[in-house]
Every structure is written in structure tokens, then in C-alpha cells.
Image (cartoon, rainbow, N blue to C red):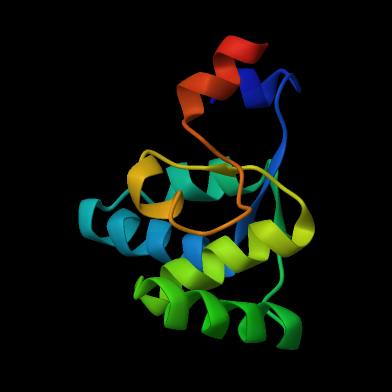
Length: 107
């Protein structure tokens, strides 16, 4: 997170990803850490075009709907999706996917 704090890396999070982070945070009782991380990130909305594209992705790939919403948010925003699940999200045609390490190495 230090690279984000220094302003060397910026990004956005889907509201689906935000909810997923808070699930884990509540289980391990570390919501303050998630709050801190999210304070540096903007949000990608879920709107009608994102929902429509997510439906298309789901029909084509069979990926879980939350992942389709995350992928369609990034795709329609022209953003690179940062994830450890490259194999999973690379099934979404046209989506640029990188690991967090890939982004750090670029800096």
C-alpha cells in the first residue's frame, strides 16, 4: 500500500470488489485496513451499460455474475483490471488484466 500512499500508483475499485473486501475484513476484524486502502481508490459505478455488458460476458463465459460485473466495469472504463486471478478474468474478451506485481514492476 505504500506505493499508493506515495501517489506512485492510483486506481479504482468496483463496488462489487469493495463489498468483497469488506466480507473478509469483517471476518478478520480489520475493517480499518480496508477503509485505509479504499480511501486511495475511486469507484467504478455499476450502471445499465455495465449490467448489460456483464450479462453478455456471463452468457459467453459462464463466469460468476459478480466477476462479470467487475470485468465489465473495468472494460467499459478502459481500465486495466488488477487481480491475482489472471486465468479467470482473462476469459473476458478485450479486458486488460495484470497482477499487482506487474503494476509495481512497471513503476
